[in-house]
Amino acid sequence: MERAPAPRRWYTGLTWNGIGLIVLACVLNGVRRTIQNTGPAATGSVAGWLAWLAQNAHASAYGLVIALPVAFAVAVAYNLAPPLPIRRYTILAVVVVASAAASIALALFAEFVLTCRPPDECFEVGWTADLVPAWTHYGVLCALFSVVFVYMRIAEESAARSRRAEIDRARFVQRMDEARLRMLQAQIEPHFLFNTLASVRRLYQTTAADGEAMLDHLMRYLEVALPQMRAAESTLEREAALTRSYLEIQRLRMGHRLEFRIDVPDALRAAPLPPMMLVTLAENAIKHGLAPLPEGGTIDIRATLHGREMHVRVADSGRGFTQSSGGGTGLANIRARLAGVYGAAGRLSLALNAPRGIVATLAVPLPSGDS
Image (cartoon, rainbow, N blue to C red; front, side, top):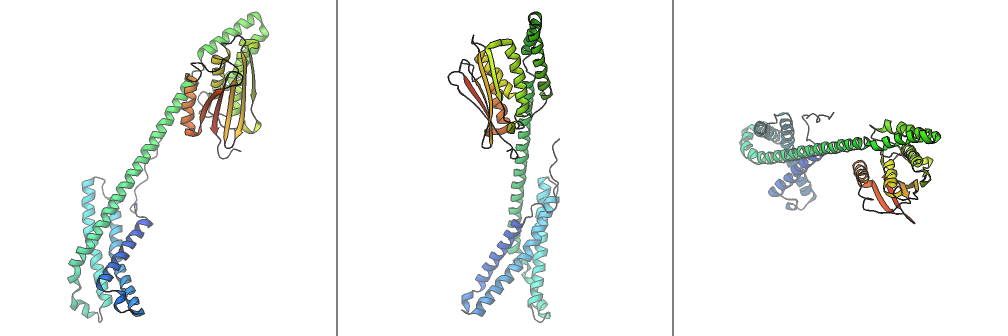
């Protein structure tokens, strides 16, 4: 089940980086205002510099008193307004106008009250006379801040939708890979099972001991294979056991024409390996390499550690490369499943064996916890 998107809170979109940008813009605007009125070089003294810095601080604080409430009001309105664009942007416009006017009125009133001495002179001067020009200046700045905030929120929401779509696509691809895996696992070729049972029946009629041995190996094969039919993961040890049972059955069918060796170090037995890959390589080696030869041959399976990768090598002494050696359905499925599970980190390579045959090598990355 897919998780629902995180609920939108009233402060969504308000970040320390955004608040820092507002503070920086207010400081720069305060410097601009101070430079327009006067400069530190006007007096050329330390007192002149200190007075200039005080004016900068005053102008910057004045801008912050206006900008920060508007920023919070815009964030709350955007997050809590209905998602329908015409309603949301209408509410935003009203909020920008109202919050900017209220903040500017508050800032002007505080400035006149704090700077006028005695306080009665503030009202004689008429602090309300500066409301219109101040709103014209700071209202436009607040509207620009609001446009930038809305643009960034739209960009974030678009990026979040893209990430969710990418996650959904990856999950879909994973499910498709799992479906292909189950289809492949369901293709433990029926004719292999039927032929094996026919061989068991024939051997019981001729050599009962060999028939009993083949039936035992078939039972071991199915004992390992059946629980993995619906499994998406396996280990090298289980896959080696499955492959050994398969090869034992084939050796009873081929007689002296087949010999095999399986070497799995203890340290790699628990290493993860996608199911049915190793037995598919062994089957491919017999079907395309050894079975067509009158004398048969050998199969050598070895697992080794190379840095953070495990290499599983299946070497045969069969016919070597033929038209179907590298393009069979089994090998194509292995490559597709490796790409689906490991991406570019999982590989299947084919090379010539000496003096004859093919070496198929599975290279898979080990989990970080494995040594």
